[in-house]
Image 1 (cartoon, rainbow, N blue to C red):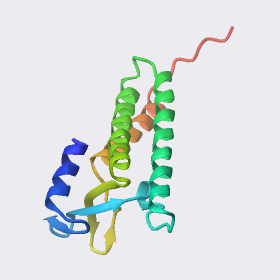
Image 2 (image 1 turned 120 degrees about the vertical axis):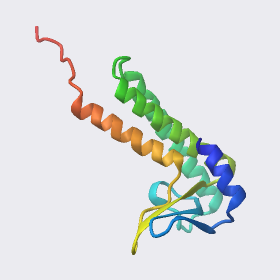
Image 3 (image 1 turned 180 degrees about the vertical axis):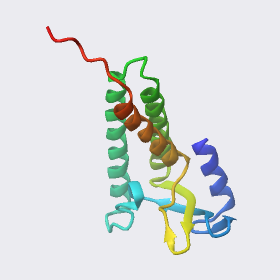
Length: 149
């Protein structure tokens, strides 16, 4: 889904071009995020190739960490497993962009009056929803502690 929607945006909008979807609330915009989450490092004066290498390495390390955590989640912990699947899928979708182009394409622009949220994509939404599910699993699902001996 992520790569398909990004291909559609690339084919229909030039960089920084936007198209209103819901006036006063939602636009699609072609933004090239060479930084990390929320555009951090996007405006950094760092060499473009070095920044792409650094952000790709960080994304790869995050994937490894998520993979190691996923191995600790039991089969019956369905909410956590589903959340981790969303996180992994989203992280892979954005990593594909970083490896292929050196940046992540963000295109969903949500705003209200003078307030703008950071532009995001399907992968980012998957990561966010997955993180919420994992967090809820940690908070709400009862863990069976072993009985003291």
